[in-house]
Length: 294
Image (tube, rainbow, N blue to C red; front, side):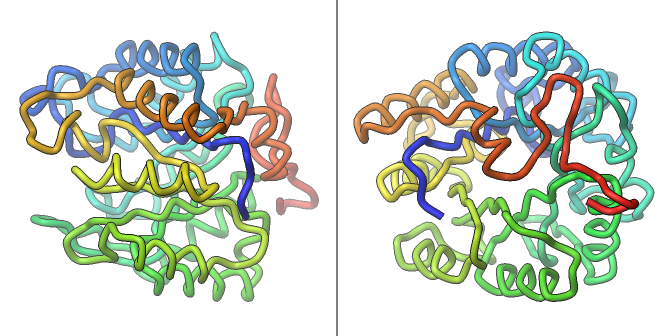
C-alpha cells in the first residue's frame, strides 16, 4: 500500500559491521540506545535491533541484553515501534532465535523479524527452514508480536502468502524488501517492481538496498510512495567510492532530505501503530492478544 507519510525503519547495528570495519557502528547497549535516541530526535518511525555481546562484539540472542536496549529506548520514547532480530545467520535453534520474543511489559517488542526462506550471502548463509519459519510465526502470533517480513526475492513473498492462507500471518503486513544481495533479487527498478506487485493485499513495504544499493533503493522507495530501511546494518559507507565511512545520523539525515524534496513527511510511530493494528505504546506493545492468539 502506498501512503504519503514516509515509513523510516532504522537499522543501526546489524550482525556484520564491527568496530574494526567502522568506529561508527553502535555495539554496546549504551551505544545502541544513544544512537537510537539521536535518531528519534531526528525522526524515525521504527527501529530494527540487533544485540551484541559487549565483551566480544559478536551478535547475541540474549533476551537480557535486548531488554536493556529496549528499556533504554523506551525511557525516552514509549511509542517508538521496536523490532527485534530473529536472524538465522548465526543462531540455529528455535530457543535461541525466539529468546527476545519472551520479553514482557515495558520490554516487550512490537515486532520480530521473519526471513521467509533460506539464502546465501557473499560468504555465509542464513538458514530458515520451513519448520523454523512456521514455529517463529506461531510463537509471534501467540505472544501478540507482529512479524517484520523480510523478503529477498519474489519467491519469499509467495511463501508469505502461503503462511497467510495457513492462518500463521494476519494482515495488515509489513514487508522489508531487501535488494542487491549477490544471490537474490538485484537492486533495480525491474526487481523492485516485481516484488512490490507480488505483495499480498493490505501490505505496507519498505525498500532496503544492500551495500552501495542502499541510497538507490531508498531514493526509489521515497519517489514511489514506499518506506525505507536505512542504517549501518546494510551499508557502512556514505559514498559509492567507499572513501568516507557513514554515521547512522548522516544516513537518516540524507533520507530526510530526499523526503523533503519529494514532499513527504516522516511517519510518526503512532500513525504507523494504527496502520499495523499495533497497541498504542505507553505500556502496551505488539498486537492485542485474545484467547491466546493475536
